[in-house]
Amino acid sequence: MLNRYSLWKNAFIALIVSMGFYYAAPNLYAPDPALQIGGSSGSQGIDEGLLARASEALTVAEIEHFGQEVQASGKTGLVRLQNRDQQLKAQAVLQRALGDGFIVALNLAPTTPDWLMTGGAQPMKLGLDLSGGVHFKLEVDVDAATQRKLEQYENGIKRRLRDERIRGRVALDGTRIGMTFRAVDDREAARAECVICTPNCCLIAWTTTRLSYLLK
Image (cartoon, rainbow, N blue to C red; front, side):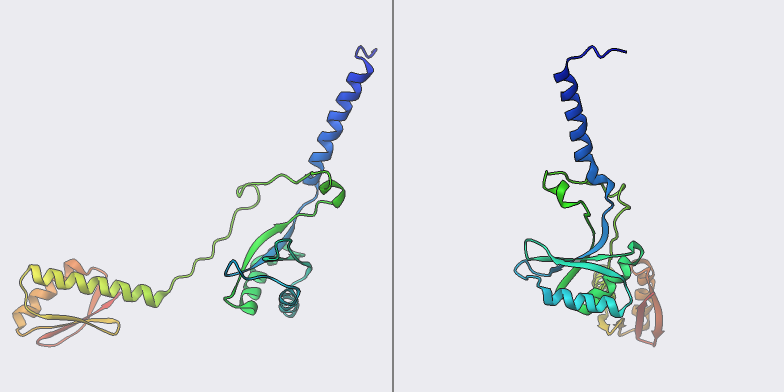
């Protein structure tokens, strides 16, 4: 079939298609799994000495890695890993080795060649659903949470006894809520009220004029 279009139109189409291939090419280069290291404060920088410590810690833990580099800002550093399955283990190793003064985050390092980067070609930014999701690490201060819950129950019991006009003293005793009364009737009335207002506490000890509760 004869080409009915002029030469300049064919050349223009060829140019557009070539540019499309050029700017799509970075997506052919899969990123490396990596760890990004940053200071806990914005003024803290990252240097080669710190990356050497990180590299040594990973070597001791037998985690294959390469390509340590301080990024352009000087505030973060990047360590590339050979195996994505070892990212979480490597993160834990570096966090222990570097201490609380540094934040170690999971990342992906681009592998786009310089000849593509020079022309402004960048790989497509994938969302969390397309790039495998995100890992959250949550830590709970159990002792502080328990203390806050005990104080909450202590104040609730005091308010309940005051509303019901039950005479007694309520105070925390370590991890227990202790209550002291002058009469057995007050103790029994308080125990009945505690069943309602402290469902997550259990009675662990009592005497004629005293009750002691512990969180379940």
